[in-house]
Length: 479
Image (cartoon, rainbow, N blue to C red; front, side):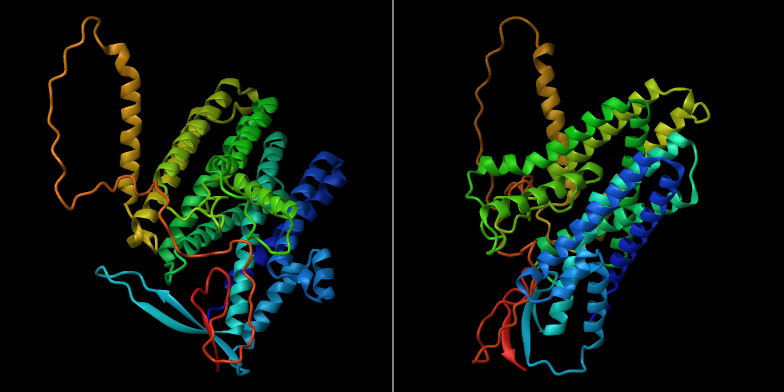
């Protein structure tokens, strides 16, 4: 059983960022900067409350008699208690004989066109640790993009205005950047495990390194571009941010309304329609917050029973990065045009070039990850290179067709010569659009609910539910 190190990293970043933000807000109060103090506390307390609610919701503490745990969550100490509980479970493994175990079946990565299915026994302690890991993976994403990302943008903006970086502010900015990158990394790993739930996924260190570099360059560049633009055009930054946010917030809802699917009712049995709507709005709110700063590896699909789009859409990714690159270049161009004497000690053309090159480096590491380091690249219906090439060819075709009426000579058009179409040879098919179609997937994963149900049965081979989303085809048996 693996050491719950990811839980320790999540709690460490959460505690360090909260402590640094509280200290920095006290310095703002001493200096009389009440606006900066209020915004710093806002970007600290709001994600902290959301983290507490997420942990309570996943562990179903409201339906269980655990008043002490609820009190600690109210005091914003829930992540620390959950971390200690996870390490206590890890330390007790093997000391007590477990009366029930679950048998899980996972496929291995195909080699030579064949994939073997492997059975493995999973005890209750390991199942509880999985629930803790899944809960902290989600809270890391929430903390990163609803707390750390706005906090980093705010503190960098203050540094630009005050032309200096204090020790407290610099410490908070470094911790916030690490928290964002770690949250984006957890989002990538979470997306891989959701899409390929039937397979035994092994993420190698080189894959972690590529994701870390990809997300670091992408997020740092995006934050710097937003700060530079807001420093010269304060009134225009709000429409830019709101437009980005509303587009990504409404996009899943528009696709849901176009599909004419029934309203999702399987999120949580105890939730009413109003409660389900609130949960879905919070999910799309988080989705919009992620896409504000970087590409969201988890694509929300409200008409899917699992609320997640499991198909790998290269076209959507390519369009996102092309439009984001154009947007960053446009914002930098506006900053360069309207910059004041405040930036006279900075070589503006060199800074613009560095930021654009940094974003291009982020795209390069993304391509390296999906082409060489993705743990499930053998399962891709089409390679990323082919998908991006087809997307660029489609864009060139659209541009050529839109420009062709202007270049067509006036006069009578020639009569087209009759042509005879040959049927395609047997055994050939077009795979260029495989990445755009929603391929059927029988895996079930409950993104919002990873609780454990261990109910004893009288017979030894009855099929029962294990852990939602990870342990499919589980069979409980007496140990």
